[in-house]
Each structure stands twice: as structure tokens, then as C-alpha cells.
Image (cartoon, rainbow, N blue to C red; front, side, top):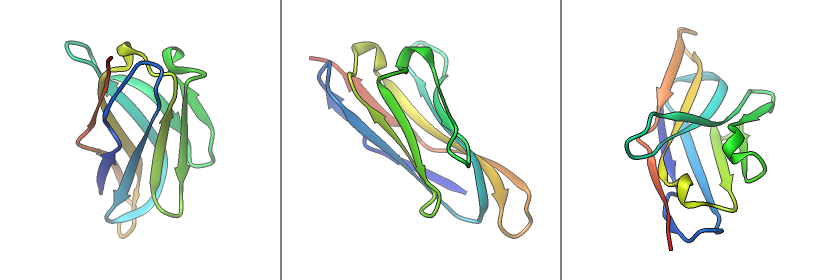
Length: 120
């Protein structure tokens, strides 16, 4: 299973970005889909997650500003980020867990990351 993120960019404080993550490969089903981020010199942290039935959870630092959503038919997950702050600067990673289509073995896949820089 492969994940490819896109949408990272340089944006001014207060601006918005929408990150996308496309999953492909031998996918039987995808359960949880998660956005993480890692800022320079810091540990990777969970930003937002969404379950297969659409339940969501967010880090306190992004609640009210970020929205996670998914398109199960297209195996896509999105992160709408509004009111961006300099402290949101990080590499954002997509993670998906589920079952492979042929063996129904579990998978845990990561994307390569997309850089979001918030600066004036």
C-alpha cells in the first residue's frame, strides 16, 4: 500500500491550505486514517484522525482550525487547515491502517510527507 501526500506550501499566517493523501495498492479496506506532523527538532505528533465511519479527533492545538475528512470510494483523506500559525510549520505525514485485499493481512502505511511552512 502506498500513500502520497500533496498540498504543502509556503503560506502567510492566517492563511489556509488543504492537504490531500491518496492511498493505492492492494487495499481491501482502510480503517483509521491519520495526519501527523513533525516540526524541526521536535517529535512527530498526531494532528487529526478519522475512522472508517467518520468519527474524528484532533490535537488540542488545531481544534477549531483544522478539519479532517475522507473519501472512502477514492481512498483519499484530506486536511483542511485554516487560521495557520507559524507553529504549524512542519512536515505533515499521512498514515493509514487497514487490511490487504488478497490476504486480509493488516497493513500500516505512511506517506513521504509534505512540507507546510507558515511565515510572513
